[in-house]
Length: 132
Image (cartoon, rainbow, N blue to C red):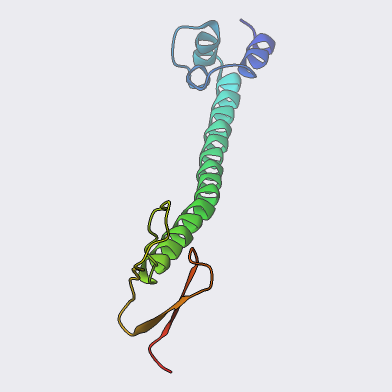
């Protein structure tokens, strides 16, 4: 292999070949030719710096994609926790006839007012804070 062929081969060579590793024709030429070996070591160093930057950029992109997902998860958990703290009205399953009893769960410090309407199927429940 001459220097011109070696330099063309360096453009598509594996990093190990650029470090004169292995038994390929390029590796053999690099062990014998100082000028091509110097060029190959420069290319190998440039490839190492390039792959390091690509890894750093990939980590940064992954982090940038993960942050909004984590933020959405935090917001979802906070909203669900807030909803769990609020009192809820227990809904009874629908029956063929109207219920004669209304059951309401009220948190400490809250008041519930149950108002019957003219429609026997409709009862209004008003939940307010304990103050008047």
